[in-house]
Length: 328
Image 1 (cartoon, helix red, strand yellow):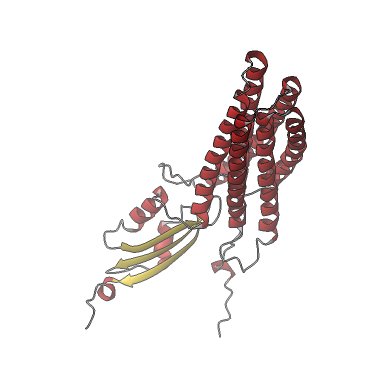
Image 2 (cartoon, one colour):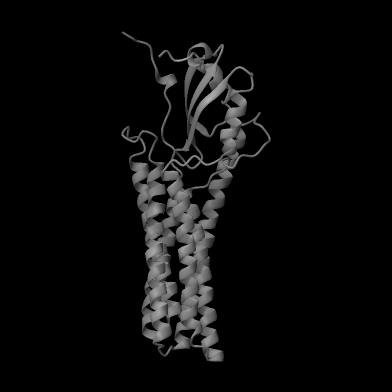
């Protein structure tokens, strides 16, 4: 029976992409967003402004997305040490982002329908009142963007310090995986920026209707806002979907792993799987074929400077066995 301690050969599977700072900033932004969202939807309905309604409903999707983000942070942290999650709980955050994309798409389609209906049946708009609420919405969106951007920069600076401290002798070439941000915080920040742009469009539409009498500009701006939402939907669904499906796109990290392991001229990689398990962490499975294969510890040492490789598994084959012809 084996009685030796194995703790030194074990490692953690906690690869959370969030921080306490990010969660706190998210909660603050949720509170501001919900208050403004309710005001804009009520005002847009009362003053018959589709542009204002579009901004309010767009903000509602943002509030829903942030709510999902907060829940994802909570559940990811709560179950971070649960062994049932083979590679940690980070993808709970990614799943929340994907669900948010689906909600954004539904609202975008709804606004397009409402814009078409308003173009066919115009309504009188109370421009002055609607402008006041639209400007308030823009100010709130700007404040939320500043709050989230501050957390985004702080986390990125912390990641940069950690990365530099752990890589005193790292290569000087850049990888696209070097400094991944918190996927939820970054998505929330970009979403707030999109909300702010939608608010600007609402203000432009209301001013055009007030000064030039272009009532058609209001529903047209609603269409523009819907298109922005749908574009964001596609981008968010594509990025989070690739992570959830473990899509192994062409990556400089994979190329670097191949080059470093095959550098001796004898070792060849017959199979390489690389996928993300955290905001800044990857898991990797490598099958190697060599005439004189080294121990797994040798190949692990070659990749030791890649701190982003949190979990690496090697499968070793000697060329005599792997390359032998099959018997009939």
